[in-house]
Amino acid sequence: MGTGMASAQKKVVVRRFGGDVAWGYLPQEGLRHGEEIHLMHVDGRISNIFLNEIKLIAYVRDFNLNDPVDPERLGRRSFLGRPRGDGVWLRAVFRDGDVLEGLADVGVGFLETAMADGGLFLAPPDGRGNTLRVFVPRAALDSLTVLGWVTAPSKRAAKAARGDGETQPRLFE
Image 1 (tube, rainbow, N blue to C red):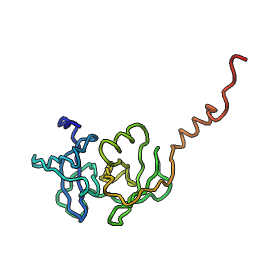
Image 2 (cartoon, rainbow, N blue to C red):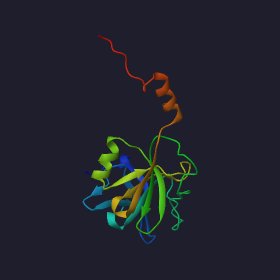
Image 3 (cartoon, rainbow, N blue to C red):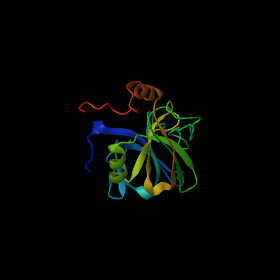
Image 4 (tube, rainbow, N blue to C red):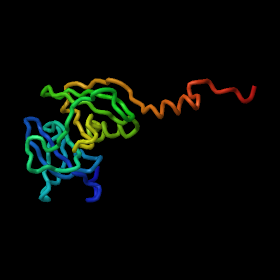
């Protein structure tokens, strides 16, 4: 995995087990370099952080540098009801007992990220908050539970209108 160009770098808050946070920039994918990430801090320094030390990486709108307690401002950690959007609704239980629900976009990218970066991306329950998406390293998890498969109502209605559930008529009999 090569390093991305500066334009591909996104704002992140890296939360380690124990509560320490680091602010900086990471690419949207291809994060892992061996068993670590290379975080470019806001002051331009680069540091290596081992994946097994990281609880989560929050891709954020704003750094909130003056808030060392909750700079990612994740908000709700579980959905109030059925999530909106498409994907697999997951509940992640971290090694320290914390719980976070999210929606994972399932496709080829899901498998590639899980294999290449050693973790998974989740859309958090509060889509209007500061955190746009979360990367959870596999090493941070105690368990992962699938709560459901979610499809937008408009896609279900379109599928029903097309009659995708019916058998296709034979053309050449």
